[in-house]
Image 1: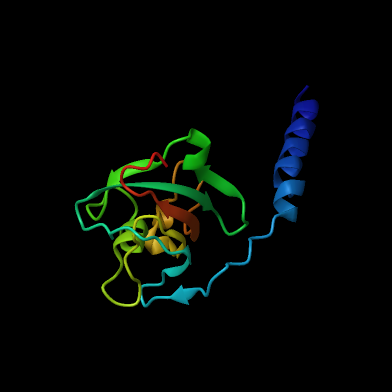
Image 2 (image 1 turned 120 degrees about the vertical axis):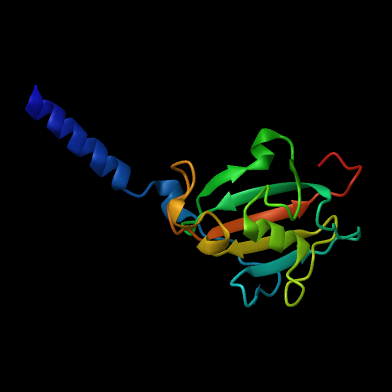
Length: 156
């Protein structure tokens, strides 16, 4: 029994380590805008510029998003839940890279306007750092977000 259990565990480990066809075939889409890098390490690209106002620190905002890791594999998405994430921006309710990515950094990274669709590449130190998150996001992971700042009064 023990030998069979060891063989089964070995087979399961090999299967888990093997690339899944969907992951192996996934290629991050080419951005439809120029990617800029800021001094704080955040890279961004606005592929649709919104017409609404930019939020201020302390405003309640709603964002739809998809999070991918460097492999390109999606690990979280508000679209799957059917509603945007609502939070108070700039007060630490989300990772620091999101607060900066939405409010801007006062220099190279402009604030998002309502209706903007932005890709954010957030370095680990402005994301979940060396602790990772929930067994889904490994320690030291760079995070790739596609973010849509939902205009007030719009359902999302």
